[in-house]
Amino acid sequence: MPGNDPKIVIIDESPVRAAILEEGLREAGYERLTLVSEMTELARRVYALDPDVILIDLENPSRDVLEQMFQVSRAVRRPIAMFVDQSDAAMIQASVDAGVSCYIVDGLKKERVRAILDMTISRFNAFSSLERELREAKSALAERKIIDRAKGILMRQKKLTEEEAYGLLRSAAMNNGRKLADVAQSVVTAAELLE
Amino acid sequence: MTVMTMDRGHDSAQTEVRSGRTVVRAGFIPLLDCAVLAVAAEEGFARSEGIELALSKEASWASIRDKVNLGHLACAHMLAGMPIASSLGIGHVRVPTIAPFALGLNGNAITVSSDLYRRMADKAGLTGNEGPAGTVAALKLVIEESKARGEGPPTFGMVFPFSCHNYELRYWLAAGGIDPDLDVRLVVIPPPLMVESLRAGHIHGFCVGEPWNSLAVDAGLGRIIATKAEIWRTSPEKVLGVQANWAEANPEVLAALIRALDKAAAWCDRVENRGALAELLSRECYTGVPQELLLRILSGQVRLGPDGAERSVPDFILFHRNAANFPWTSHALWIYSQMLRWGQAQPSAAAEAVVRRVYRTDIYRATLGPAGIPLPGANAKLEGSLGDPLHVGALSGSLLLGPDRFFDGRVFDPDDIAGYLAGFDIPKPSQSRRGDLSPTIC
Image (tube, each protein chain N blue to C red):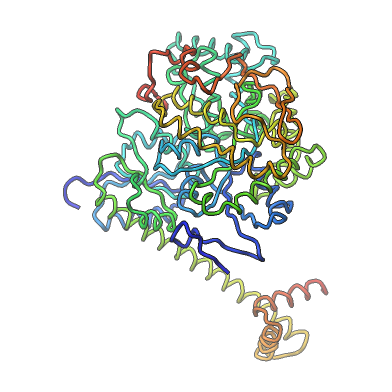
């Protein structure tokens, strides 16, 4: 990014997402980045940083603090909401879907904001899929554990081999149209109740 | 099954139908006055009108506005000034937004830190029974003392530039001779951070809705020194904000929603339902605040300070009584007058004409008149002119209007905004306040 590199402030309480976004922007050549993760006295912090662009999680309650900044002095450089002319509905839609909100200082060229926002949207989406994968991995692990416990119970109580116990769980699940992990959970719960 | 609405092309504005009922997505902020929406959704009022009210808890007013603008939400719990700001395009893009129903009146309070209260009490010899005039006079003495000592002005938190919290805090300060742009600092703080900011000493007081004032008191951090009902006895607070396009494309769904909200609001006001309402709102998906605290607030029994002093505040929060749901044009115009007063908007006949059409009394009338709800004879009234309750003639019987005085005795004539504003000393009538003066960022 040659020449006048815009000063970008990333306000995010999620350090992982902020890091992912920061990395992406640095790779794209933006050097003047600041992360803000502390929400108290946010207005003071943002004013001291005097950014050209502010990127903030759409669900951050502190967005209302930034809203107030539109209301104050025109003498001070002030942030304005993204795309005030609403000419780029698709872009607004994409950023809302990704869960990011962007404030820019008056006068910054739209094309430049667009590049920054494109990067931000893709990184926010990457973070969401990362989170989803993590959640899925966690729940897969939890499911495997519960199935293992159910198998153990069946093996002990019905004197089955591991394979037979698994087969029994699977056929019970298929016959009842339920998930294997749900059937396993019922077995574990029942065993706990009967203990 | 989904059916496309005709007004918009993209997916998010599709009308969804669940078990034969149209799904209406409504946003809310976890505050006591989301009650009417919560009750409509949870107590079957929406369903019996054939709609499925899907509530979505939102993190900020900015988020509510954006999601309503984009059609992700059909409507929302909005600060009374928000549909006006959106319709005028102040602070953001102009998106015509209407308010066909008010979600209640009053319910806010002004709280100061225990330290600041002690200084005020020492300086002015407060007994603890003072009303808004007495407490603001004490605050002025403290501010003058601080100035003489070369200390900075105190900082007060409020919740949004277009909130009644902002306007009533400014009104109260200015009535006491304190210039809200020069003698104090006003900062926006999200309500969930308000109590913490007071504890950390970042702010010295705030104006916010319940339960946040009572939480600060119960945490031993502050004292409630004025309630909204004491500042302006019958004052607008939250409304149902609806994007005008959506309202136009879905008139029957909107009417069903308004009928459901009216019944829910009547339910909220009934004393025998208070316990159930407190229980409902205490759930994590709403405020997550203890039931006993909510019950105390709903009963209007306001605990003022950590010492346990209490005051019974009549009309502390109104959900339905006293025409609380009627979207008075004079309420919208009063809010607009404050936008002018504090430099958020510039006076123009065109803007005033827009404001007159934001609060849709016609939709309220057309929807609830046939349902037998008493309707006021006029859409606007002189605000602040009633010292006692007044029975006014209404279609289908009589309608009780509650006392509606401002604490300083002024009367707002919606047909003479310029005259009203000329009567204030702060800011001076000759000064137009464009916001340029405002050192509101600390």
